Amino acid sequence: MFRSRLFVAVGVCSLFLCSVAFAQAPRNDKTAAAPAQTVVIACQNLWDGRSDTLRHDVSIVIQGERIEKMVDHLVKADEAGNYGFQGAKTLHYMSNDPNSTCMPGLIEAHTHILLQGDITAADYDEQILKQSVAFRTILAVRNAKRSLQYGFTTIRDLETEGAGYADVDLKKAINQGIIPGPRMFTSGRAMDVTGAYPVLGYAWELQPHLPKGVQEVDGVEGARKAVREQLSYGVDWIKVYSDRSYNLRPDGVLDDIPTFTVDELRAIVDEAHRERHKVASHATALNGVHNSVVAGVDSIEHGDYIADEDLAMMKQKGTYYVPTLFVGEYVAQGRGGVWPKMIAVNEETVRRAMKAGVKIAFGTDVGGFDWSITPAKQFATLVKVGMTAKQAIQTSTITGAELVGMADQIGTLEPGKLADVITVPGNPLADVTVLEHVTKTWKGGVAE
Image (tube, one colour):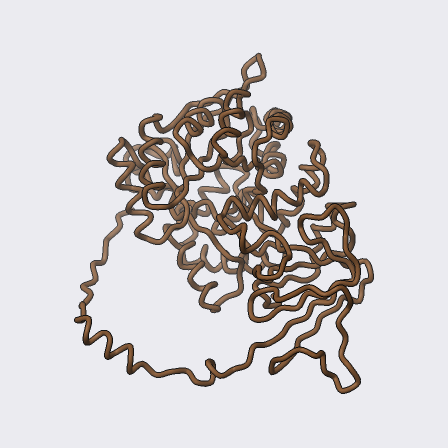
């Protein structure tokens, strides 16, 4: 497929003329004068994201998009219908379920909002070759809404799989209130070396003209240029694919073929960090992980196998680990080969990472499995491999917030933070599966 570029000439006004234009811009007096709306969420039970136990009968008072205060009683209206808060209107919510629990909105650190499942190569090719970017974006709008319904108020979307920078446009539409959706961190096209990423396997005469799931990047200078290009289109994170072609050795080590050289990876990381952005590395096995950690990436994605020395290096460097356990189970039987065996390898790697003190963030690779399934199913998997319920949930709250650079804004319920709140039908510290049945979501104080 040949692509054309559209060059738009943009006129530049003088500082004086621009100042006059801005000074004369009409003011929306109605918006400016509107009193702040108060939202009160009365919680029979509440988990703040840090405590070991639930609090009971707590009300979250929200002004604008932030938590103003939390009071130790269930706020109710007086006989005149007033709640005692300043503002034009007070919205009040209390669940009819006495077992309902309020808790922080969840953070999904590895999604593909423009992908609808790719158990097999045929599933993937069907989307890349037969669905237009416009149609895929329409499906992504649906997925954005689903994300909120599942309780995920923030996501890090790790590439569009052949849909260009449609994720950046989707983020803009959400931020402007055009469509409902989670707070998004985007990575656009992602990067891999020539000949290593689908669409592959078609006649060689056609191959140069077929779309690719990534931007093909080669060499140190090519790597730096690609980072600059992707950042110019508005991505938040740089995503690289650092390995491919997995096989399980007799000694239990999951081996691979590395893609980028260490020098290329270092150039990508250096350029991204120089421009104050971070790098996520798809690194599933031995060499991809090692090269990525040495190069200084900020997060290892998947990491089905990580050598002990690399776990130690990740701990020392503060590299985040985002194990996508659920998708591994989901696609294993359909893909066959080594994939079913990788499940146990991945589970053991997570246990070793916990023991090594590596920071683990929640990510499922949803899009690799269909969006009709809630990513919250992975919480039970994390508990199965040895986490407590609290530890498993905190991968998607406190640690997730740290990963995306918003620890001071989201991840816990505290005054001053963004009012990202969800309700679940039970005690999540006793049973993480209640997270699979979110009953209400607020993002920035707005009920979704």
